[in-house]
Length: 185
Image 1: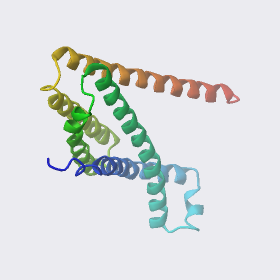
Image 2: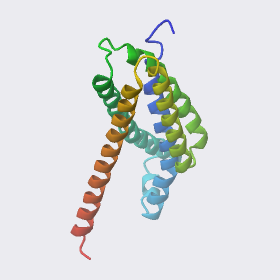
Image 3: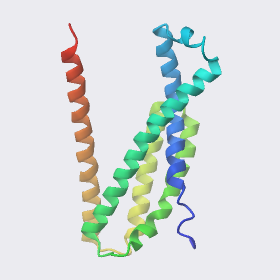
Image 4: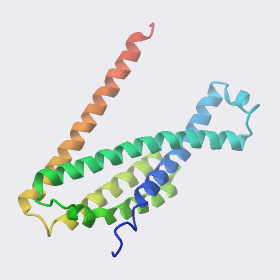
């Protein structure tokens, strides 16, 4: 690729596409909850049904965009820390070689729109896309680093995401237990 900035907008588009898929799925759930709580009919006094759906999709898109942006920031941090610790590249050439991998997430985002009615489908598409990106990242780095360095990068990134997942699970369990403890049962 001649121009390294050609795919600079792809991560944002991928985030927006995955967010839209999840927001379209979540919109049906939110409307169902609002109907069960008898709030939906009151809200229809202020909004039309179409406007209500668009407001819910917009709000959910905002939440999912923040979530995916956080994951993107963490992924960039993990990649750059792994390269800092395990490669001899001081100019950032290895990152430039793997930059085209953003197209993989863009394509995954487009495919996720097909499965907007299934949260499991969207999650599977996201995980397959992430695995494809990892494969691409390893493929692009492999000619430029040694096998022990590659193993170090893979182990570092795996431990990074395991630690982050466990930390997130702990926070969610603490929050859940705190809410349950505060309920008068």
